[in-house]
Image (cartoon, rainbow, N blue to C red; front, top):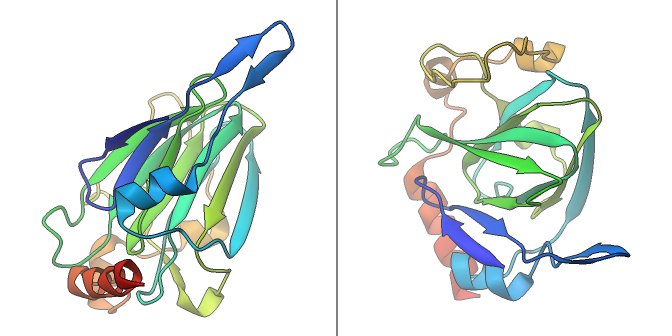
Length: 200
């Protein structure tokens, strides 16, 4: 498994080594030790989610209050998606920036997002199946969203693919509105919480 740190601190891309023969393919898509070496602590697994999306479905941008936030380890086991990490941490050097990672059933990469980061993806084909491990369980009172088509974020979603949003994501505030409403995590609070996790 190879590791690549993304331009946004707290986000990493993992590419597994695949072993194939006439029977099929085997790989290690998650390795606790490799992730802990990268982030400084073990990922506590509280929930595992599976999302199946039609072509053009855009999910996100989702984030959670910190503490405790919600770290995610995400992969696509069928089809392909364009995954996006958004820095929603007020005070971060890269606040408001984003980075794409293509996740598919060919390279079988995974992406890790630390607490405090926003996450979303758009399905590039029908039945795109995304699996993700979460550090905390679903808590609707602590979870928020930013409109994925916010002009200020200026996320360059693929051309020729009309985004299909849920009613909840369509009604999400812009990044500026979320900040004005006090919904966004701060970089300082996130770093303090990570320091606690790293000291365990």
